[in-house]
Image (cartoon, rainbow, N blue to C red; front, side, top):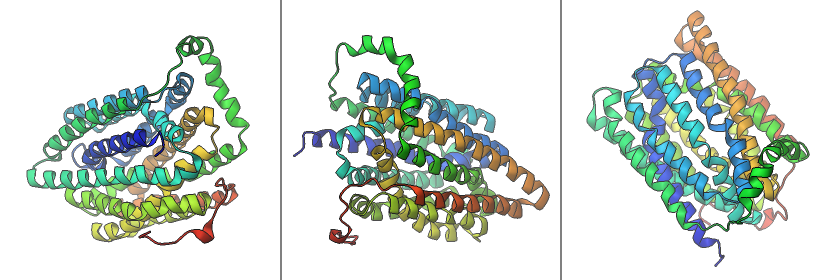
Length: 420
C-alpha cells in the first residue's frame, strides 16, 4: 500500500461530501433565476459570466500562495466553508441582479480551494496513475451529486408552491454538507517548513509575476491554454440560454430538470472507470478530441429538442462524454505543468478560462436578447445556439495540434471493456 493511499481516501470522502452539497442546489440555480426572479437572457449572461470570472480571477494568487507555502489543505478547508455559508443568503435575494452579486461573491471567495485541490491530487498521485485516480475521484463525486439531485428534485416536487419555497430545504442541506466536507481534510497531514513563511514575505510578489514568465516557456502548456480558450469561449456562449430553454421553451418542472442532471450523472458513473483506464493506456489527447467534438451536439440539441424528455435522452450521451472529460482535462493540465508550479499553473489556466467564458457568456446573453427581440423566443435562441455549435466545432479541431503527454502507452494491452 502506498503511503499516500490513506490520504487519497480522505480526498474521496471530501469529494463525495462536497458533491452532495453542490448536487442539492447547483442544477436549480439557473431555473430559480429565470422562473422565480424573472431573469432575462442578458441577466443570465451576467449570471454565468460573473460566476465564471469570479471563480477564477483570484486563482493565480491563491495557487501561487499554495505553492510557496507548500500547503493545500488550509485553502481547501476555508474555501469550502465560505462557499457553504454563502448558500443561505440565496433565500433572501429579490432580483436577478442580487443573485448575480451573491453567486459572484461566493465564487470569488471560494476560489481559493480550486487550485489547491487540483495540486493536491497531483502531489499525491504519480503521473502513470493520474487518469485513473482523477476518474475515481470524479466517480465518487458524481455518485454524491446524483443522489443529492434526485433527493432535491423529489423534495421540491413534494413541497410545491413557489420556487423560492421549494429550494429552502435543499439550500439548508447543501449548506450542512458544505460545512462538513472541508473538515475531513484535516486528516491529510502536510509537512511544513518553519522558515517558509518568512521566505514567502520576501519573495511572494516577485514570484507571482514569475508564474507568467514560467508559463510562457512551457510550450505544451501554452498550446493547451490556447485550444481550451478558443473552445470554452464558444462553449460559454450557449450557457446563459440553457435555463431559459428549460423553463420557457420546454416548460420543464424542477423534477424534470433534476432528472436531466441525474441521467447525465448516471452515464458519467457508468463510463468514468473505463475512461480513467483509457486515459492511462492510450493517452489523454484522443479523449480530449472526442470530448470536444461530442460537446458540439449540446447547443444543437437545446435548439431543436421538442420536449425535455428528448433532451434528457440525449443527455445520456453527454454524461458519457463528461466521463472522458473528467479523465483527461485535468490530467493533461497536470502533465504539462512543472511539478513545483502545479498550483500556479492550474490557477493560471483557470483564470484564462474564467476570462474567456466571462466574455463568451456575456456575448451569448446580449446576442440572445437581440435575436429574440427580432425573431421571437424560439428562433432567436436557435440562432445563438447555432453560433455556439459552429464555434465549438472550430475550437475542437485545434486539439489535434496538442502533443500526447502520456509516456509508454500500451493500447494493445488495454482491454476495451466496460466491466474490466
